[in-house]
Image 1 (tube, rainbow, N blue to C red):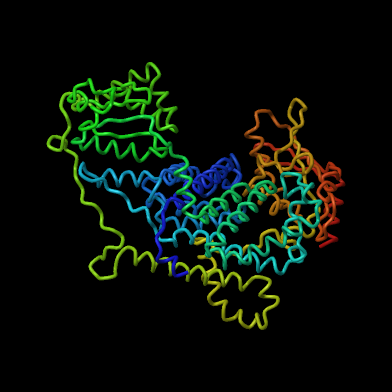
Image 2: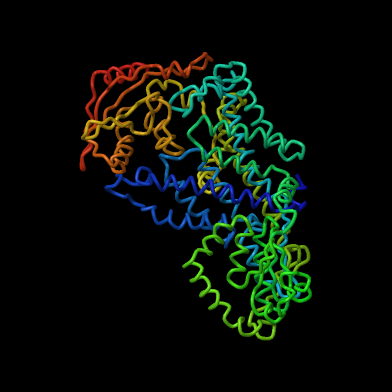
Length: 628
């Protein structure tokens, strides 16, 4: 592990993680924003509540876009962390497993060099510190620990804590940890019975998950184990993506697993994407400071190696397309030559440049449209007006020159005290802090509490550390317990699921998108945080009618407010299902085949909501009371 804190490797993989992770996070908060009236409002579309979170989301969207682009990254990651603590912590009834992962990863992002490459910050530094004599290159090597910290905290600690819950579960110890959740209609959004019916397969996968989660934290830092762990991790989370309505949870973990990909693979992939031959030659004045910075921008965005930047001096005579032109003309205005030998000048040289970069081709095409091109040429002539009459050189271009920043391994006042040494010390401290916190969480897992000798006596000592720190660890670092899909906690006694139909004034029946006709999850509403809330807090294994009514009203009001048709009434149907810790063929399809029974109606007015339940609902309540 000491290598983590001393070896420096290429930062490309970390930047790819930054982009992919941030895009997933953007989608997650976009969903929270879409359903903010359900999640955060005291009364949807009536009373906002103590905190109107809309303005936070507006700023947060911009912040995440900045992180994706790698622009003002340090500032953006700090704001991103603050918003994640506020938003994820204030959605108490809608919290789910991935919220804590986001908080933990967003905490780490503030201290990680995630914008060394593939970023606008990198470009701005090159532009600022370069001159016509030398191009400044940002150090693309970073400490290896920056790759492993998100993996260690976001995956390793989560898995090992989860294992200490699974070891006390008969469902998981019998190999049914994958089978049962995927066999319950209110938990899955796809019928995968063709796989669930293979008893040996689902039990093998169940045990494989246990072995995988147990060994991950001990083995992932070995070089030879990374590719197998990456393949298995991505495989499992693609399975989660297919089976369960928590897509951004699955994609978030896939993003973290990208950090296990060896940096050499990213380098080889980058080489594969590059063109063997350039398709456009861009000529510039070697004595022009402004032109030199333009070339830096071009090379930064030329990821496919399609552009060849040449100085006019000493090169233009070698190009058949330019050798008959006067050098002074070439020096005053920008020229480019495409693969067919066509010469493009000024504005059109830049449009061809955009087309030749490949991924900016639509922009070049847009800029070539009559009208847009006319306006573009006027803007170009305005910006380049002085240069079109007189060359820009070091003597007459007022472009400031900056001294390059100190390297991270250069000492500051005291020998051995530098940015690199501070970074190493910081990460070692974080490892100690998070390991201590997660050990406290693990100690209070059922496996330890029920089987460790004299656990009750030791609790008196540990309690003094656990109680003061548990809240802070959870809220600010994302460290918490991880009892994911436990039979006693989630499924035991879960015997009723509900379908809701909306009746329009024309008599049409529309299903409120929570559960569909089969009782499977409808991902329109029941997705991510909303699915967890509806499935395990509103309708749960300990069914409570008052809790159900209170919880379902925001969904119905949201549906009513966003539906184009006028809703006059809602009809509720119940399906009585079975949960069990024993494998059974076609179990999911047997639950799907069970009939829906009407149990009541609901009318929502502006200031009141009236439920009317029939005898079937009374039977269910009596049955629940007897079982309790």
